[in-house]
Image 1 (cartoon, protein in one colour):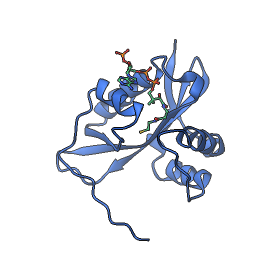
Image 2: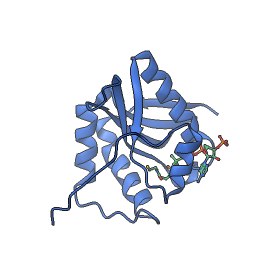
Image 3: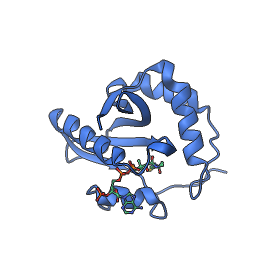
Image 4: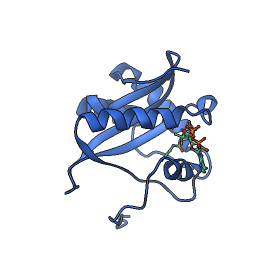
Length: 147
Ligand SMILES: CC(C)(COP(=O)(O)OP(=O)(O)OC[C@H]1O[C@@H](n2cnc3c(N)ncnc32)[C@H](O)[C@@H]1OP(=O)(O)O)[C@@H](O)C(=O)NCCC(=O)NCCS
């Protein structure tokens, strides 16, 4: 099995947006995106082209991994994973794990010190992240509702 992280192209934004919409409308996320996802993905690709990836398995598109450099990390350069999703048929075959390893290798070469993301403890993905060595951050995520 050959898993690769490749540059996500702007012209693939629609596919990526459809994948995100489909995967995150499922339980327990049930997200109804208020924004135009395709535009958001395109902006992400433009803003952080070196950190916007598609995950391929044996040369076929299997998923996306959208990251950006986070400014708020005194420990050094930090990478924040905005979005990680595999197409349903590619889930549970070790592809997410391999993609995470590939990302970590790249980030270490570029002297990143930390990899962060937000994950809901109620989701299966949370178990995945824990199995890949993620731990509770010393930061606490806080918010204020505006409507
Ligand atoms: C989350 C996701 C990226 C994980 O990728 P994946 O390819 O399905 O996961 P893998 O098959 O590589 O699993 C790797 C390891 O995680 C473990 N794991 C997966 N889900 C787990 C869970 N719910 N609890 C504990 N461990 C889990 C596996 O057992 C495996 O462990 P192993 O290496 O010891 O065998 C993928 O399932 C996905 O896209 N899900 C839908 C979208 C989503 O939830 N994205 C994350 C949003 S924050």
